[in-house]
Amino acid sequence: QVQLVESGGGLVQAGGSLRLSCAASGRTFSRNTMGWFRQAPGKEREFVGCISRIEAITRYADSVKGRFTISRDNARNTVYLQMNSLSPEDTAVYYCAAEAGESPVPETRSQKYDYWGQGTQVTVSS
Image (tube, rainbow, N blue to C red; front, side, top):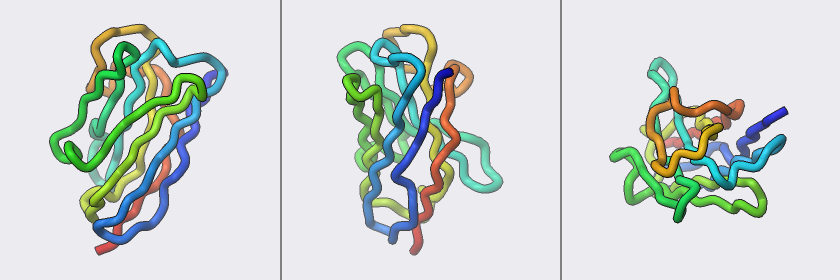
């Protein structure tokens, strides 16, 4: 059974940093795009960033570009999201996702992802 388990969320002050981790089990995702999404209260789930299987190509939402960095450790079957310069607008539940296919182009659309974690809460206080 495939599982994605996020960790690293919490409460941080504005301007601070957090590093989220997503550990996958049940299959290897080294050949698959993995992504991060988030959902704030009363809002739809939105794309944050993703990393491809090939050459670790990354894509980011404009709202986090320059502040967030996504990386992966295929040996650990884990993807990370380093979040710097956090603001209250970043408060949300953050979800890790993985594609089942081996698309060479990292996907930003949530419907293209097949596996999802349970989410981890990130709260940024002002």
